Image (cartoon, rainbow, N blue to C red; front, side):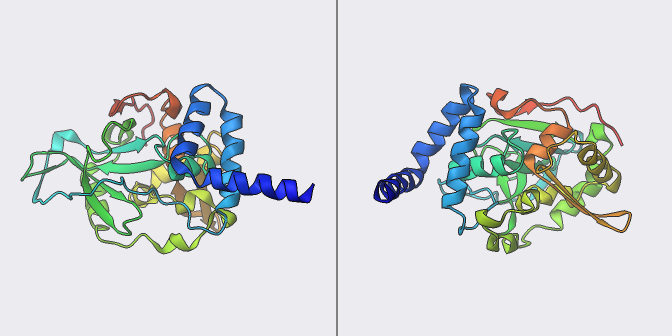
Length: 264
C-alpha cells in the first residue's frame, strides 16, 4: 500500500510540473464553475511548491521591449488600475492564495504616452525585480479590467509623482517567501506598488471593508500601529472586489471599463 501511494504521489508530482497542462485544466474547471475542484488542485500544487519563491507575477515569455521615452502625459486620460485575470499556473496560484476572485496582476496607467511609438504605457512590478514601464499591449489578448481612480477622488498628478518615484526600485525582497509559508498573502503581491501611492483616506476605506468582511480575508492585509493604520497590502482581488468589478471569469476582453461608485 505504501509503495502504491508513493507511486501515485510521484505521478501527481510529475503532472504538477507540467505547468501548461495544469493551467489549462484549472482554467477549464473554473470555466465550468468547478471552482472547488480547481481550488483543491491548486492546493496540491502549492504543497508541491512549498519550498519555492511565491507571490510575484511572472512576465510574459516573449522578449520585453521597453518603451524608449520620453513620455507625454495626457491629462484628460486620468489614472487607472489595470487588473488582469490569471493566465499561467503561477498567476492562478496567486489568485487562489488571495481570495480566488480570479485576478492576479495589477499594473498602473498614469496617462503616459511614449513619444517614440505613440503607444500608451503602464507601470508594473514583475519578477524582473524592479518597477518599470511597459507598453499596455504587453500581455496581448489577456483579459483585464480598467478601474479609473479619478472618480474615486484620487489626485492623478500626485499619484503619478508617487508611482514614478518608485521606478527602478527593487521589488524582489519578498522572493525569499515560499508557498509553504504564505501567512500574509496580500503582502507578497505586485499590487502593493499601487496601494503604497493611494490616498490615506482610500486605504482606510479598504481597511474598513476588510474588517466588515466585505472583502476576502486573504485579499487585503491590514497592519495597525496602535489605533492608527500603519500599512495596508491590497491584492489584485482586493482591488477588484472593493470597486465592484465582476468575478474575473466573466471578463472576456481587454480593457473592460469598471464604473466606480466609491468616492473619498
